[in-house]
Image (cartoon, rainbow over all chains, first blue to last red):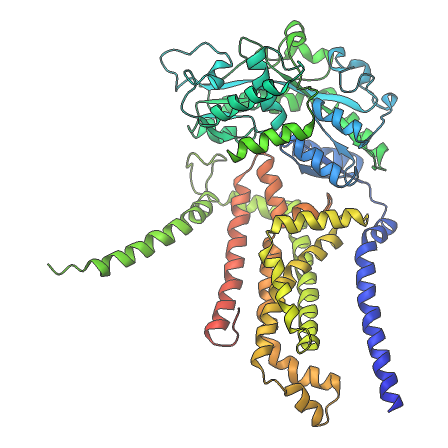
Length: 356
Length: 259
């Protein structure tokens, strides 16, 4: 009797111990793994149309550093993911200017060492010292682009209408189906710019109510809210007009020359994507190696030719396509997506609009 | 005029219904053989996307990750299911309903909740968290299957076996477990297929370094998309269909019933 009782207790404690081991192993698995392998690798979170895979492979061969690249489609996605994991998990992210401001406030980024970037003296001064990071403590500017309208000239065969933001907001001029921006901040600020001539003003509740009304009226005509699927809309002949960034339209133009990119006469928005290092990253030296690789002239030139973005260095200015990358004077007149409206309010407007 | 409307409408309706379900999949499979990168034109029949897929290092890495995660989570969730059902049958009958929870909750809510849970305990995301997520998902399928099979057995088999002199472990391994084998087998297959195809939990809980097949497809689609994704999807559809038809065959032969 005593023997079998002892046996039972022993069996049960072995089983409990087994499951406790499984649990502990799950919680501590990644720590154990990192302890055993010192991997030369970095995790990159990037825009889909910014990095060419063949050049990434070249970097991996030259330096032996493995690159794990994940993609996001909107800045909000990047921000939510980084905030949920409290700035860990990725070693390099490429945010747009307006979300850099938010990330610095939440402490998600770490300071960069400008002396480690070899190409720093060659960077275009108009891209440095932006409102979001006045001393470039956290970011290094990379490619930038301008927003405008992508027009299928085959649809407007008789006469191209005068290109202004009326074409997407005025219900008398809007075509039957358009593609609209898919991010809350960009759509709201675009509407504010259209209604009041400037997106930087202090917004009272009446302003916000008018913006909401404009966006809701526009929704009837919107075929899709997207910034990344515009090639399906334009090439598949679903929408003759989309709101998009210059480089995206440039790439579509290579497939179908009838598509044109035009910046509306009232002016437009510019967005600058910069490198930033999340706060909890420990592989900073490897990241600097990668950034230096990407800022080399031949790599920059290849990416510019392939994706059509506007380069961050001064000497590449002369080869810019004038329709996609405006000159310095026009750049000075462009607006940024900055606003004093809180994120919560922007998200609320967007959710209400989507639910309408 | 002997045309019977009924004998004509029902087959038509069924055909249209199946077309609606399967035309997108057929188009997907067809375009994996398309020589052009854009799905707007047909440029000719080719198998180059399949060759490119087999040459891609990332695809094989994603496949190996997917297989590792699926087999480990199948093993864990089926083991847990069998143990829970066997030990808790009489006393915990009421609580088995809670295992349906993972089926009822929208998977994205489950995935976001898991992410919050892992962040709370500062568990860094990776293969282990992904396996944990898939095991949770698998439990919701495995427990009902094993439980329903267990209910079909004689109620007092365990008691009878113990009465006749078998020890506890002999009762389990030689009496109950062989009887549960068909449902264990069916549950493993089902959890395997679900874990292989699962996207949402992998998206939130896998971390940056681990990539499973659905995540790989997602990143290729996002970075421009290519018919390589169509090729991969075609292969996955066929593998999944094979497994599911195998389960259906078992069901038809009355080897197992799935709730």
